[in-house]
Image 1: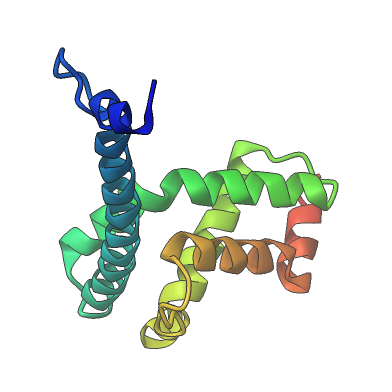
Image 2: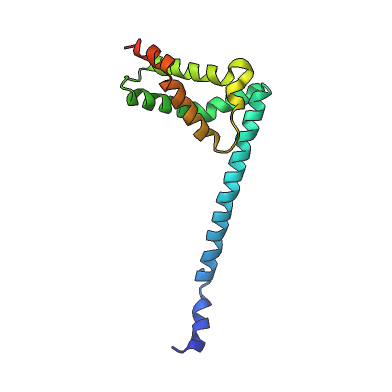
Length: 143
């Protein structure tokens, strides 16, 4: 095969994709991921803004999106501090988290600045809430 025959390798007689055709979708996927990240961050900020405006549907969406995260992070933090994560204990921690977020005209929720995803920020808040000295002693009383 000579160098002049090389161009014929790029033309697929069967219409199958060539190397050049495969590169394009990968670039599009990378671009889409970036777009999704920006969109997701915007969705987080909009959800927080709606919660701060006391939109009832926003509360439902917040719980739908983050209930599993809240439960799993409370359970893992309980295990981390040596407490068995019983359901009543997990509910108490979840209630305390909500109280911390929405107490004092939603001061806790107003601290979300959007520098990270809302789920990441909530994970930190959940862990701090469950590990707080006051709450830890309350958790230990459940033993």
